[in-house]
Amino acid sequence: MNLLLCFVIVGLAQGAEIELDNGVLVLTQGNFDDAIKENELILVEFYAPWCGHCKSLAPEYEKAAKSLSESESPIKLAKVDATIEKELGTRFGVQGYPTLKFFKNGSPKDFNGPRDAEGIVSWLNKKMGPPAKEITTVEEAKAVTDKNNIVVIGFFKKQEAEEAKEFLKTADDDDETTYLITSETKVWDDYKVKKDSIVIIKKFDEGKTTYEGKIKSEDIKKWVAVESLPLISEFVQDQLNKIFGSEIKVHLLLLSPKTGENYEAQMAAMKPVAKANKGKIIFVHVDSENNETAQVLEFFGLKKDDLPKYVILELEKNAKYVSDNTNVVEKEIAQFVSDFFANKLVKTLKSAEIPEDWDKEAVKVLVGKNFKDVALDKSKNVFVEFYAPWCGHCKSLAPIWDKLGEHFKDSKDVIIAKMDSIDNEVEEAEVQGFPTLKLFKKDTNEIVDYAGKRELDDLVKFIESGGEQTTETPPLEEGEQEIDDEEEKEEEEEEEDENKKDEL
Image (cartoon, rainbow, N blue to C red; front, side):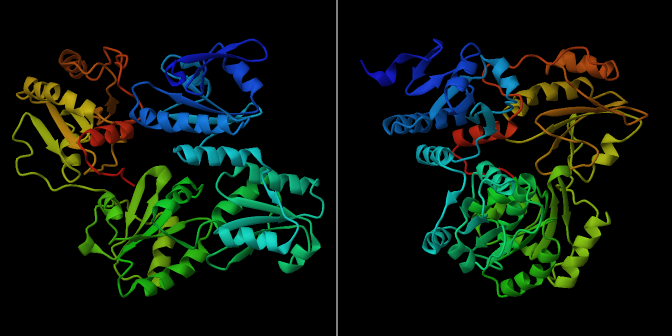
């Protein structure tokens, strides 16, 4: 019998039975806690059977499980069907698929490592060893620093001291950075260290930085995150996790060609401002000649003819500020940053041009430039669909929305409208998923979010009742996903053989 096609039953010490599917433990509400308790190190995937990304991960996940088993590793791989085991999904805060959690001695943390078999195994093997490698010679240290762009070295005479423990806790929590620890005098002398210290050795900027704060794990972690990025990062794939995963949520991006004759002068103008704002803003250069960055220009509503241009992106507020200036000089960049912190900058919002026939059909077409005039007309109840062209749910709603427009086309106080929220942005409406339906009420402009069934009768009743919710949101049908519109976008694009990338 082919073992890869069958289920094998394995028992834990306490007798709880767990199915083994192609080397991966199949966990349920009934056996989950036993599995976590009996395995010091275990990676758990929370998945949905219909999820495209989960299907792509499955063969790599199984290869990783097989590799770990063949090497007699104590690390186990497991999976949970979160569409069935909903209580487990809720317990561990699963909001999208696949979600991977790594449990060490029962304590979970998010897995943010690679999604290929080799990468998964490498990430997990690091978790087996000590968080920081102990070195006893200068040669050992040099060998590690030569191979890595960033190395954090803890110099502690007594590694059992509380400060050393705080350093090791930081190392254990950091999945991306290499950590060393040493108490050897010769190594201390070579790095010119006189007392217990933490030093970063890096192949950019000043090359060496010494930590000067309190030796507490959280503080060290923040310092390492800041120092792990150059003063000016390039917008390239291997830097994106550090840029967007940082706790610093304000970014200044310079968009210009890296091959341009003014590139070096632009970098020289940026560096003093970046240094002055280190820890507050991440400075990034986006090479406008790189095809992979085309979506970045689109995100900011810019074209190559508009460049060079510098912009500020405030991630937590999803706010963009595009400078009017194309002259990249230190004084003006510094003033732009100063105005941002003083709340003097005006948000930049994208808008398509107003179509000539925007009001020809029963459903009116809104863009950023005509949104206020139409949606905030206090003589009307205006019901707006905010959609994305690639959204499957939006496509399904389209014929119903057209019928809704026809139903109210002769009304004097009701307007049915739609807006492409990829090409247009408005401050008055927060859109976090597609489609989003909002009623802007007559007289007050009060906004009422529609949460009912997307059926014509229900939509009509909602409007005629003045925004009263007459139905509850229907349960999702199999194959739908409530929270991950970006995943839906990617799956549709794969089906259409498109190569678009997620927006910045």
